[in-house]
Amino acid sequence: MTTVLTATGESKTMILNMGPQHPSTHGVLRVVLELDGETVVKARPDVGYLHTGIEKTGEALTYSQAITITDRLDYLAPLSNNLCYCLAVEKLLAIEPPPRAKYARVLLTELTRIGSHLVWLGSHALDLGAMTVFLYCFREREELLKILEMVSGQRMMTSYFRIGGLALEPPPGWLDRVDRFLRLFHSRLPEYETLLTDNRIWHARTKGVGVISAEDAIALGVTGPVLRSTGVAYDVRKAFPYAGYEEFDFAVPTSTDGDCYARYLLRVAEMRESEKIIRQAMEKIPAEGPIKADAPGIVPPQREKMKTEMEALIHHFKIFTEGFAPPVGEVYQTIESPRGELGFFVASDGSPKPYRMKVRAPSFVNLQALPKLVEGRLLADVVACIGTIDIILGEVDR
Image 1 (cartoon, rainbow, N blue to C red):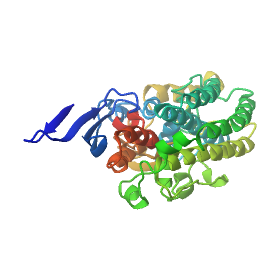
Image 2: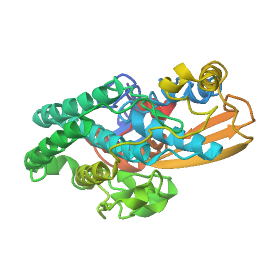
Image 3: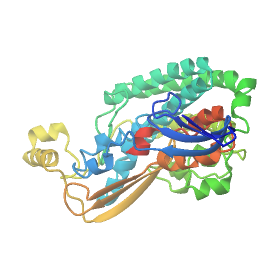
Image 4: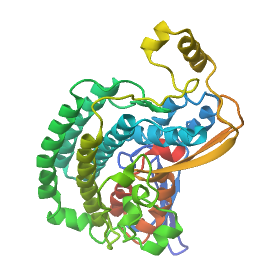
């Protein structure tokens, strides 16, 4: 930390490093702040401290192997990353998952959205001094993680989706478990609002703080709740439906205030919409049927067939030892992740490994808006603004 002095001994501005090791930057983020007293004159996010090379790693793996590294991009919404990548490769291969897999994907992805928003709400409230909300949100998230563990065997890095469908047959009674969670969550969600929505301290820390206009948000490529808080009703699930979202009835909450408080209200509203989508998906999922597309040489055969049919055994062996080779071409697939528009660009040269994998990460793009949100505000407001952008540094750095 340095203070610049004039010849008369008067202070001008001060350069302060916020991070990279700071509890309120939500990861290894460094923000170089120029301060005039406690007022932020200039802010410059400095990223790259968590660089993992996931995109380049994906080019060294077969298409199926690369699914597991997509979890590590956004570890709070791993199924969103799984889904986007699988949809991109399925588009390249021109295959469709069966209805049972399609609706299960929607259901689990929306559960993941709720879980991600719960972590955001709890950690953001904790950043601003509201500890009780953090405990409440993680109480519900724990029940949600138990469902993901029941279905996939993993609490966080689920890797449950596969190219052409699902990894495993969903366990008996899993929809009953989802129903119990939804009934519990529906009764608990008002508790968060009781603690925060009309809280005077919460208003003082979030209302009118971190304001961004729709024009600036669009110019910066911002998406997700940050963009919708400016009045732009852009949601990939509505604009470019995928995975059957055109069959679901849900709203896209918006606000015109563009501040931290509006982004809080929107994410709470989005959790309610996700609840509606999950209920509809539960009604649409067939009780029986395949969970993988019928694509020999691409999708592994059922284990029963593998044990009794030589051709199925050969396909199984070749898929897991050599992979499969899609036709030459390139695709781009987007979905609406909890943080905004997530995109996967995958190029094929006809080999079993992607020639190029590139991720359009919403956290990385949305972080560009931070200077707009904080410049002219107080140092304490930087914490609130970083929180309401809702960044994941694994996704920022990749």
